[in-house]
Image 1: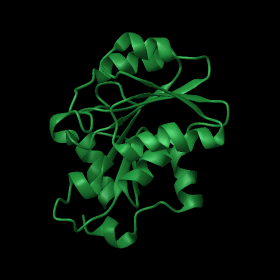
Image 2: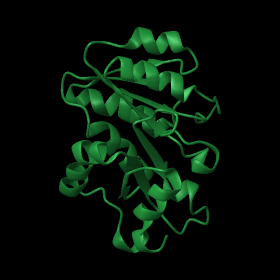
Image 3: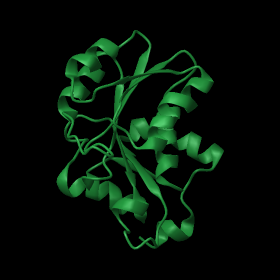
Image 4: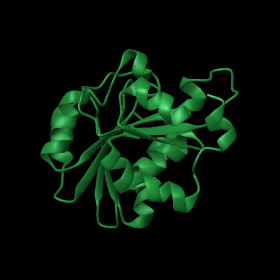
Length: 186
């Protein structure tokens, strides 16, 4: 129920709910990279998101480069032949910088990479990253949709192909899925 509602709200083809927002972050990135790959991310990230990019992914042979998210030339300069994904928050946490999602998506796609966007602050009410060119949108259910603290969860929204190729089996085999109780109460 939660996935159906959120994909309609965001305008996505497919969605997968996760046990937490950080489970959504990790799954959306880990599901599409392998040892030897490279990720480019904006420096201004929620602390745990930055830890995934800077500390967790490199443990598995995935290099990362952090850039000033407002500087499009830095995004372009950071691209390597093995770059598979770009990751950003907009507005950023904690500085509330608004990044040019469309332009950054263009840079990512020209490099053969995907763009994952954290849309927790703006939510689909104020911003639609998929419509701006993002390949995957990640939201925190616990922050964005149930401020009263009655729901802990996150969601990954994208095309059916992205979900099938990068998310579905990782969720199924490793367990960061949302509990049925939380998924049904939204």
